[in-house]
Length: 391
Image (cartoon, rainbow, N blue to C red):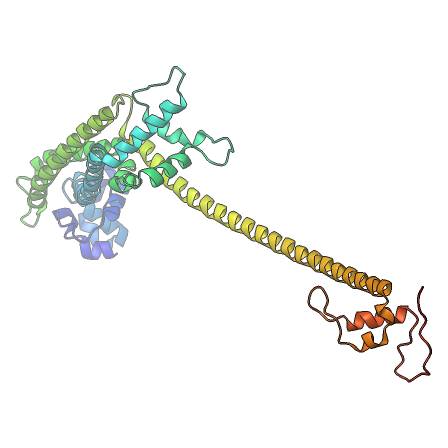
């Protein structure tokens, strides 16, 4: 009902400002056939008695060349959207080709890969090669180290970061490569061919609208203006597309590939895959480095704890040895005192305690020695008993 009441006086005249492409495409799908159109035109006198849907069909039947008009209007609506999509895609591919051609960092990285490959293949038939296929870049991670924990990409990333840090960020020079990889040459070609065909059909259709039946019919005027603009835009797009094809062929040849056998999508995809794998290897190298640091730190802590325990055990043993040595010194002094008779001299017992070998006092040890000779240690006074003399 909204379409009938608000659009019936405009959509057939070239005014498509209020109609979306999806609405117009729906109209095209459900248009009555030619015979039905002819039958509907005969219902002019019965218009008021028709239901809303029949009135709408009657109105469509009375618009001259309704089907090609709708097709032209759909093309006009979609042309601007398609042109807006195609332009950036063409720009991305051309820019990516230029980046690959001028990037010194990426070129040096490829030279280093070739050098490593020649070193690894020394002595074989592949030694001293002058180049390699670009799809080899996607297979570097298949070359494993002896520990099977790292591969050639990890080695390359470490080498660039430690020896040639000025080249390690080569991906920064290839900013448009990821977007260029998503561009389909076949899709671009198909879109441009569709544009050209629609422009040709529109030009033919406008031949029937040079003399409109009604002064309100602005279809011819509106579409002629659009055709002029669309032709200019198409020519620019076509020229850019041709230039893009030349750039792709040149860059593929520049890297030693055959442009007839290698398309742009495969070419860009191999390089993008390599760049992404390389960045992944850098991240993994950093993780392995951190893990190694943690492992070394834990090992150092274990060694430190082991040394601490060994030192503690050594100090304990030294203490025991010192105690044993001190005990042996006391016994030696006691035996000397017994042999010389000093142990039985009362006046000697009142003397100040002698110093031990290590500077300590021996009064306790001597008293312990006296107790062993039979003299009482009781503090109570006893009767004087003559001292026996050893003979």
